[in-house]
Length: 227
Image 1 (tube, rainbow, N blue to C red):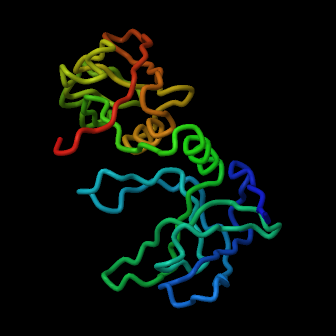
Image 2 (image 1 turned 90 degrees about the horizontal axis):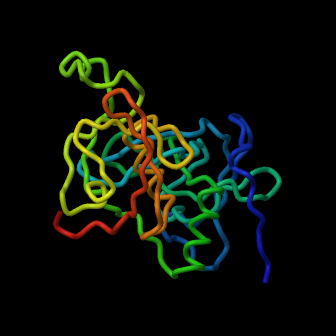
């Protein structure tokens, strides 16, 4: 069967050409994709479109190539015909649902990880429940609670005694500074890092407690509906 190669999304450059392919609004039934052209407007964009929605978008590729309803799931391709990412989301700034110049794609390197999970287990679980709540360490938080370690990370505010965080020894007041091999830069970043793991796989965390750093491992579980 014909196939297309993946680009290394870590090597993407702002300003390089992009080609978005898909079937906007489902208008065409002949199997031929619609093609739009633009550039990489930005890399590593993090955002949560709806504060009430637990889904977060992290390290996304931003492009000005026109992406509309029906383009989602189609490839974002570079000038060499390699897949840079998968078209996922548009920002409209209103209620029209039309394109206004902000399209986003999942980077190809993350897509390859998802494909690996699908091959191994047949599904991908993205709604994990670590059994704890956390907020970013900010200047305002430190002023309110002077005992908080002055480090970049996430301050644990609550731990569920029946959840994975409690089982691996995490306590309220701990500060998460690293997940796996990456330093945590934001709450959205932390959720994205958790999604890199398969259910039941051990995830290492580096935390600060009483100004001392320690390491623990946590097994993620699926979020129970209704919680």
